[in-house]
Length: 273
Image 1 (cartoon, one colour):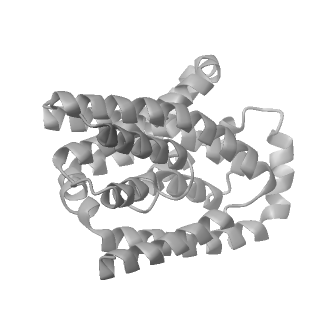
Image 2 (cartoon, rainbow, N blue to C red; image 1 turned 90 degrees about the vertical axis):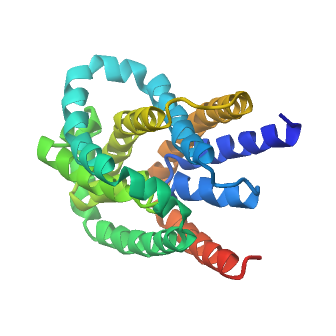
């Protein structure tokens, strides 16, 4: 394997680790960068994109392991309920997502653009309710914020997450803004989104490995290991960055970023620059 091939794995791992928990769609960024790096969107690259997302999720386990153990049964029940819609729809639409949607940069660019517009609308909606929710958040600040999420809302969050099967939508954006729409505090839904990623990406990775039969060549395994480790390390910094960011800012900067990237992606692949 050439050093340039290894560098490409490193770049994709960094992109994945940084974007997984930000509401800008890690899958879209990986597909865009794979194209820029002139990597053929083969079955291996598609599997690579899914598997290194799981590496980012392991960063959540590493950072939240004590909290997960202390609240295991409460978290377990809520995460299972939230995961059910994604599990069912994921099994139904697996082939469509992997073999069609991931290859459509028109869908990716539209998802990024429209998602950004919707995020701005929802942030304005959320801001109008801020006076009411700020009181609630202050009351819950001394408690585990995830405990404020009811089982019914967990299921609805799972439905929102299922939308993120469309490349460019962003799993974190779908769950976070779905939660805000349901009246859940910003801190609670962000942390719940982190945790919900664990069963979601573990299942997605497991399903893909079963479908591919672990039929990777030696150079592909090395490529995968580099991307996996890089994604895990960078994701830890990304999680800490987002938790600090939401204390002072809303998500509008990410929304405008999505709009710009969506437009650039559309023009780039329209004119094949």
